[in-house]
Image (cartoon, rainbow, N blue to C red; front, side):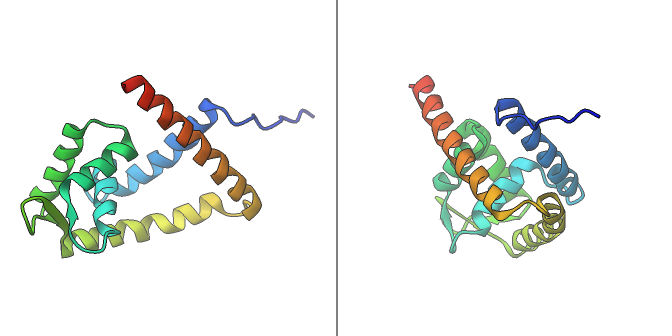
Length: 149
C-alpha cells in the first residue's frame, strides 16, 4: 500500500484549487447568465453602503481580477446595460433591485456548494491557510507593482 504525502503549498496547488473552485462557481453563474467578472463586480456594489464611485468599483475589479481598467469599465458598463447597476449620479453606480436579487440568488446557490467543499476542514487549518494565502497575495501584489513600475 502506498501513501502519498500531500504536497507543500506551491503555485500549482494554489492554481488547481482556484480553478477548480472557479469552474464550480462559473457553472452556477452561467445558469443566471452572469460571468465571473460580472459577479465580482456586482458583489462590490452589493456589499457597499449605497452608491459607489464608479472609479472605486473599477479599482476594486482591477485589484481583484488583475485586469486593466478598460476591461473593468467594460464589465461595469455591461451590468449597467443589463440594469443590474444604475447610475444615480454621473460618477457613481449603485446596485438595482434586480442586481440585488441576482446577487442574493447566486450567493444562495453557491453557499451549499461552498459548505460541502469546506466541510470537515478543521478551523485551525483554515486559519493557517488563510494567513498563508493572505501573505502570498500581499507579496505577489508587491511583485506585480514592481513589475508594472
